[in-house]
Image 1 (cartoon, rainbow, N blue to C red):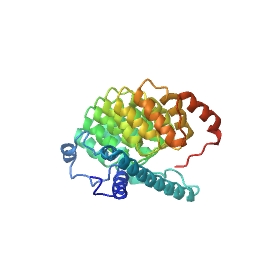
Image 2: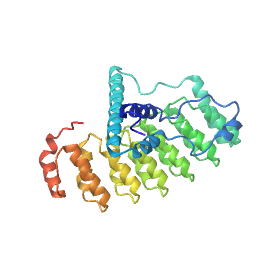
Image 3: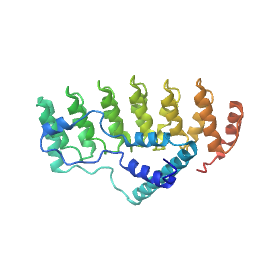
Image 4: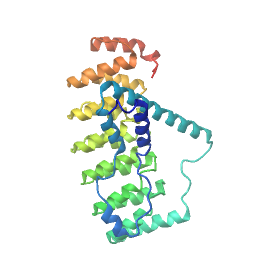
Length: 313
């Protein structure tokens, strides 16, 4: 396929897909019953996973080129976003919700506490989608106790764009859901959350008995290059699944943080898994532009150069 499509074109297509990783807001269906009929747990397209699957189907050289362009573009977009945020002074993270939004929150709370029928609860929770404010989180936590999995899924839909560490406890609770598809979906709420507290949820997901949920963590971190997630990546490179170990190493190799190198040396090179040792060595040599024959070589070089080392990619 790649010989017909230039690497840059594919990378830009993947970037466009990545930018849509969050669930797009849609007009609410006319009735709550329509919501229930059209809901399909696990059907939400995970675009980050599709990107990874597309790249994995390419030849090594093409994959490396496309992945570099993709991550460069993602990094540039993130830098622009950070610069824009720095220009805004004394702006609170969240303004108070409007009176109309408060009324919708209160109505959903009341219906959930009164044990209303599922259609009514679904409709009330649909009304919260788009508020994107932490004030809805107590209501979402309440909805996650509902016996109807569709109610719980709609509740999760409402937190997908809050982008605050305040969603972490809600995701942690959702990771106890009996439906593995809902546990997987809940991770999407952490897509743009950067704080270290995300590891509370990610580490819990890494202990999930369902491999798809654990793979979901790697899909989440695949493009983000989030140094805050390094403790979770460290856990993932020792996972029993080769797919997850590979995903963890793909996540870590482009994180510009010295903690990533620490993990590659002190965990990757000493791993019980041969695939992890080999991939860690390759990643280290790429990051440092050095060649290492043994763990001791890498450790000695890093001890000497860690304080002065600078990333050049």
